[in-house]
Image (cartoon, rainbow, N blue to C red):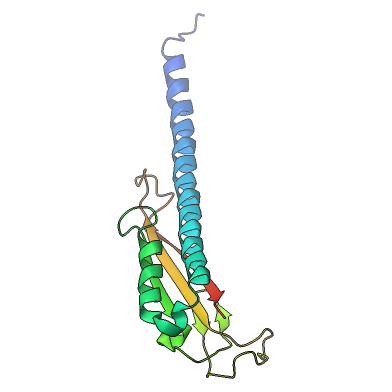
Length: 161
């Protein structure tokens, strides 16, 4: 008996192509997430570097420093690319020193202490800037659901004194 093999290659290709395209789509979406994380890291790092280089503004113009840092982070990769929250020395305290504790994005300032005094968690009291930035990611292939409605957040704590 003769077997009919017409169309077998087309069916095999359809099965293989579907799986292959899903793998490619997942790779592209995951790559987009990793790239966006890297870009947000770079934006927060640029804001942190500006804070460190402009430490004198903590005592003379803390709200201006916060605005400048937020603009740097927000617009690092295009206008309003990210959303930055900047806190300069516990809501713009020009003279106080603090021992911030907590985790990135969830800092606790505690009360003002003498500058240079020892902190209970280690380190010395000083003046600080916290930077927290978020940005959203939209999937290039939403139908597959590999990445959906993802928001990425990065934080930095910079001691300026």
